[in-house]
Length: 561
Image (cartoon, rainbow, N blue to C red; front, top):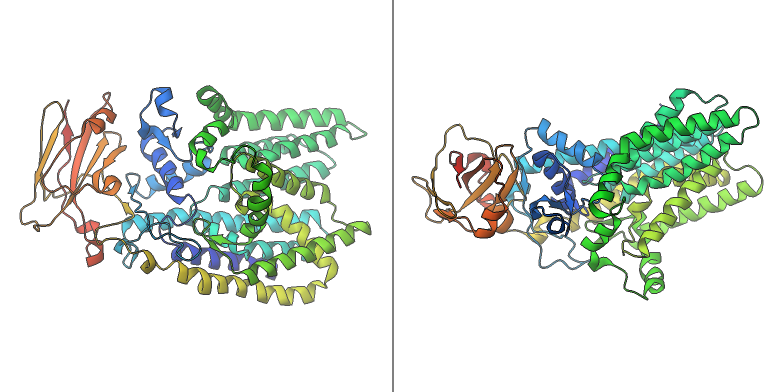
């Protein structure tokens, strides 16, 4: 392995792991919704519905999820992990921070003792799920290097520089330390781009080339709709094959059929489902309805693009942390901007002299397509987030690295980059993000925890006696011998398959003492085609050192109609 690639990988791993551990629970953008989607898959074993669609479809609002418009591959990975770790019955609890005021107070939620050592089972689960982001990021950095070697085979320094730029980019490090579906999509985009480039430049296109490209495209389309630009690049490659002077028509048609059908078989069902449910294969209409507050007002599109989109899209690509509440310090943003300007200048100079990278067509097309789709999306929905450009992070980094290596001798450039980029990344993490993310800035009550696990598990030795009195609505009573006078309890409602329908403390902070008569709206949401159960657990005082593993629990009791 080349030393600079090794440095890029080690820098990525160290920085992303740092963000994984220093970012409080659910302080990554949309992290609550990412976890909610995964938990729904793990428990219900079916795809969720978009917000606002359950009533129209005659379904329960519990079947909805905030990010249900996204394809499911990333969330399936998290759900399988939750089952593998025996944590599928985990529920999350978010307590809003009323003092949230970016860019001064940047924590979106309040945080309790479960996030202090020794951390709770729920926080350890969150870290394990975030670990996938770290690993996927390492694969992406390696694939960026592979793409650089393909595009500039006679200049290995380009691949090294591209990998180092990506591995040390502050926003890259942050998003690969939290839950984010972009991370899997980015891996599959880089792998697909490499496969498409190999196919377009290979003298003989084999059957397995078409199948492998189709598999990668299908998986990419299953990960996020931001990957759909790959379909345009696929068409470009097909046309290039068809225009070959000898056997081009047969080669192009064979590749198009094999890769297209394979991709369709893998991912087509998701778009068909969306079309049948929402009348929209991409579910964008359902997304815009669910997030109507972020819609661009009619007649204000150009004003928004000028004052909102343009100033934020590139700066947030460099770094904007938390729920996009903590901007990177301006000197760092300007420094990365200077690197980009140098790279573009060098690339333009080399292209003008006829010495541009041989894969310029692929890289430039990918960057322009992704930026264009992001711009198009922002014409209707305000989301000027640089992470939306990550699907083209490899081509962008390779183009900038090619330009930098055209201006500066690689040996000299590596000396500076190998020092400044990792050091800068660690400076941002330790001196800017870590102090702002200290949970002391948004302390929760002593009885709050961000996650609760094993809510459906039957305790080995129940210490709470619970009984159910039948009626129009069940009345659940319980008693714990020797309980503190101020003890509060959480009641968990779940079915025989392990799907959780209620968590009275975690979801609504209902201060229960001895009994609960199910409210009519709750009782109406519970399924009638399967057995439903309840369990009682005393709420731990996390701020006083109590832990959920030590809390008394009741036996599991059935709620009878």
